[in-house]
Image: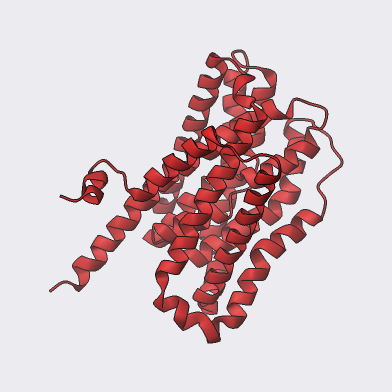
Length: 333
């Protein structure tokens, strides 16, 4: 039995080991200063390249079908901006007497953020889900989040700030929508080449996630937020994040089956409806909670981000392997 086969028996593979190694690397040698800026730029262009490849790979008709899939898009929106906030408010109320006020605020803040973009789509692709629908759901979630998250913060947490700059929308467009559109325009010229070299998209998929993990974990280590809370509070936050993620993931699976979504759409709902964006959450927190203990408020988000990446990586890998095995069985004589 090969090493890869032995790892699969325990739900592991080379990619998960790379994820673990990336966390160790960020802990021992975190990117800081100019190095952090370089890592952020690499991550930025890796994501742009990922969307360019998706644009060149996907049929326009499939993309339009993703937008028109109102049941899936509605469920993703409902879990992101309704189910998640209700769960966050409940947990914050139950735990407020055992944790610092800033951490309770952080739990609610985490729950009202938009979904991730790059990792949601990457995991959907790895698990053989509906990638066009994931592109639509994740992008729409982030565009709406620029307006909805500050509004929900003002309503639920009574926080105030100077608002979110429209440059956030421009950044989303430049990093995600523009490369995707360019890829679509160039699809007649390069679409067949990318289709024949699927490993290229796979490398960008997984490589972008590794870069994101390294960047996010480095930021936490450099900021020293792990030393700002006691062991009890840290344990409670980790458990609350796990409970929140488990509740929403089970809910997406149940809801997808209840409304009769097919397997590809259920995969998309699972990964797009259960994620929260660190990339959007950090800059928003600096504006919305100016003058407060921002590092404490974002701690639940930082931990949730790492937990969701590891959990989703395992689920996506196993779902992708099962899909591959089904395809092999279908074509075998």
